[in-house]
Length: 224
Image (cartoon, rainbow, N blue to C red; front, side):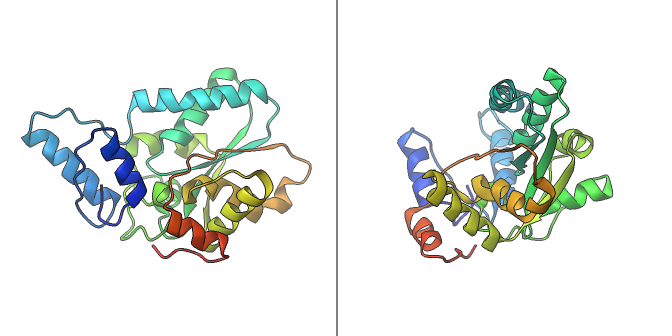
């Protein structure tokens, strides 16, 4: 994991028995070190984007679409891309016409830039407190799926993400991490286009440290 990762998430991984190694300033530096260690030690590498990961996360897309096949649009946060690719796979398997929209942070918008360019466009930094979307280098295999498969990719500012986290808590009492609230943040940004339409949101996780969440509930935005 990179230095500065969620303290409580790290503690949970150690509690499951993981030997946790902290390396680098962000996810991509940590990923590169993990792949290096897998080559130099007797370890089996599991990349952040893999066919089996996509099949796994596609199950929630399948459940959502079977329950609500009349959805007009679904918003999905993009980190390495397994989530949005799984939702696209489930939609296509059921033969639905639902628009799937990807969501990135304005501070880590490599996926949006890559779709616009038609090839992988890394960013220099991934500055966002929403660590689930804090990825500098998009995964080519994922881009090949969500590039043509997504309706569009939108970007949200950290202030918008924090506001969406507060709304999730206030309206539904769901605790959402930054990446988990990104879809709602973009839906709010695009709400004028959504009038009269049925919309789905992927709340992808609740991994946020208590001090950071307390900041959000106070009306503040945590600094990355």
